[in-house]
Length: 270
Image: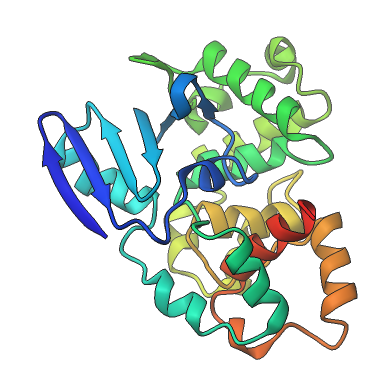
């Protein structure tokens, strides 16, 4: 992948393992929208971004070099060698999935935003998840260029469940408040979670009401960058039962989350 700084834009070329529509619309993040002319825009980590992909060229518009190097490289996981990882997958179904949908990468999202977003995702569909999160940000986030930031746990911890009525999150409101309070008060320490081994990190997140096995695995994968996480929903459960009744292939050990995303997207779109 080559990086050029052109005027106020950042231009990536030779982007074999980065497909923007697939990354932003495959169910791992909920604050991105496709606008006119194949332009994507959204807010992540308190920063607004517009970007566009034209074959193997991706343009990050109106982006400073500092923001790109300190934020977006990490967000899009651009320093990970996906060529090496995907070429190590020697199982037939995985090879097919990777060829069918090349360019999916695991986004490195803000830890708190990932936890809260996947609490909201429980027993929900993507359009409704996006709507709830959008209303949450508009109601309690900070106004910036292009929209609103994701509200901090400290901001939400001071609310009561009924204060979240306008976002129409239903039974999830009490879980959002519980998560915000436990995290803001240090009962669940996200800095410590980053350093824990996987099972201890998962156990720490399970202290939050509304965080079960799937939400914890999603939070660790998409928020903490724990590639060994393997979230299982209805689709993935079906995939595992059908394709891997005797266990997951050995070749994905350590990168189960990447393999899961490819398998999930492939089977869901068959």
